[in-house]
Length: 134
Image 1 (cartoon, rainbow, N blue to C red):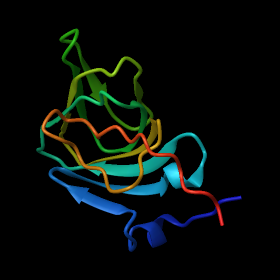
Image 2 (image 1 turned 135 degrees about the vertical axis):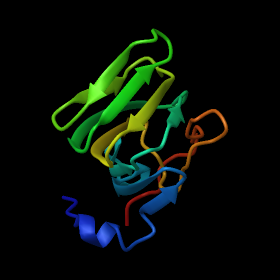
Image 3 (image 1 turned 180 degrees about the vertical axis):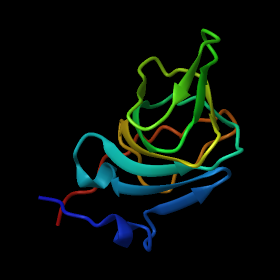
Image 4 (image 1 turned 90 degrees about the horizontal axis):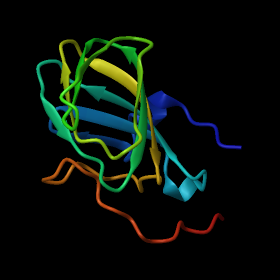
């Protein structure tokens, strides 16, 4: 069983900051769950261009408001507490928070922990095997 406290994660190297957001990574690849689980905050007034070419992601908005634009279809959707979106086709998208958006995110395959977006808005692919448990 894995039990972690979000406040402890925020004080550790599992707290990752980048341009326009920060992410607290509660589960990572080395936890061997087959996915990673994050609590991420996207900051109001930002325009976050993302394209997870190597990962699928599901996001549940828990706090805040904004929009997500699907660059493949041109459709824009409202984001507010209770709304979930899933990037099931490696969808290119833009998130525009009007208020800070706090969300729970799941990535498959799991991230290793220190990833930030590259020039394409993606996390790099990790082809290494997870470390063996102690």
